[in-house]
Image (spheres, rainbow, N blue to C red):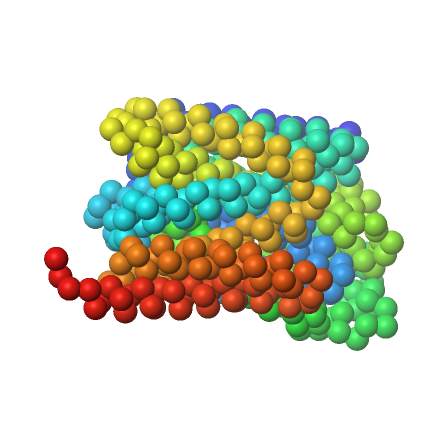
Amino acid sequence: MTVTLALLAVYAGLLVAAGLYVSRRVRGSGDFFVAGRQLSTGLVFTTLLAANIGAGSTVGAAGLAYRHGLSAWWWSGSAALGCVLLGLVVAPRLHRLAAERGFLTVGDYLEARFDRSVRGLIAAILWVGTLSILAGQLIAMAWALDVVAGLPKPVGCLVSGLVMIAYFSAGGLLAAAWVNLLELAVLVVGFLVAVPFAWSAAGGWAGLRAAGGADPSYGSFFGMDGALLLGLLVTFVPSFAVSPGLVQKTYGARAASSARAAVLWNAAVLAAFAFVPALLGMAARATRPDLDHPELALPKLLAEVLPPWIGGLGLAALFAAEISTADAVLFMLSTSLSQDLYKSFVDPGADDARLLRVGRFTAVGAGLLGIGLALALPSVADALKAFYGVMTVALFVPLLWGLLDRRAGARAARAAVVAAVVVTTLSLWALAGHAARAWLPFAAGMAAAVAAFGMGSMLDSRRPAS
């Protein structure tokens, strides 16, 4: 374990050094927020994929596979379906608008399309919710450090958070894009090497299926409970289609066609990768059937079951996956707070230099808040579900409908956001303890948003011209 810990320390140092080196090219807020809109298709693809393969799609999905088997594929599979919608509909349209009008964030689009109140309302909701996904990444990294070095959760969260803050706050998207390339290389190699060894340790496919005991659905693609599967589809597909963090990464592409291609390649690779944590989680159950916490399945497999050099490489891959997604979330938090809230409502006259300073300061502040929340939340799944649910109901309908229908105005958008959040919150409370709570509140929230948006659009169309 000492060698593995030393390797992780060296790797973390390389990430920080790479981020600081690239940060020398950051001259203004455009470089920090959208990398000067000069990223190649390949770099956009790698930074998107690195953002999508994180705590949820590794630790969370492996923990789900530990309990439910192969059907854990739907965790990342649902995200891949959402990315298809992002690539075909959302990203190309928003990239063209962003390039034409100088948009830096999704909030810039919302204000231009509706008004400043819609921008502020959604930014405030998402900023609070987004902290939970950052906390989820830090919790997952803390689990890995607990297994490797016996570090308690608070120390693991703090160490992981400080590494992320150190390399991102200096260079923004420009630094993250190049650092993510390094992280993705480690991630892919580490997990692809781990799978055959885990397969062998579990006794092949027969051993993986037998790990589920008498449950015949453990090896099935649709083996998990229907309510849980619906929950993944209803929350993840819309969320990944309109995620501000992903959309804003596509703003860095040189052209709309590059943004579309990068997102679709990301979706295809993410769908293929979804089998990896599912198989690793099943292998963990076959070899370590009595874990108290399912989210320890992947770290335990890598640290205790696989050969030391394979396990060490896999743990480095796990660390890479989680910290690359964490920086994507920190990117969304810092740009949203500085551009959508600070510049829009506090200091509209802020010049480029001040906006860059605010972006860096908010990256540090948001990172520290994420560390604090990670100490309070019990698990990765709890953290991520809160974020995706809030994003889905608050942003999906106004953004997508606004892109496709130019008639709806700000009143309809405000009504949709408020109706979605209220209905979702009340449904979550009313369905406490019911299986349908995994999906019905979010479906009801989106249905309420559609109804409110549609009604608002009808009223807007009937108002006499002023």
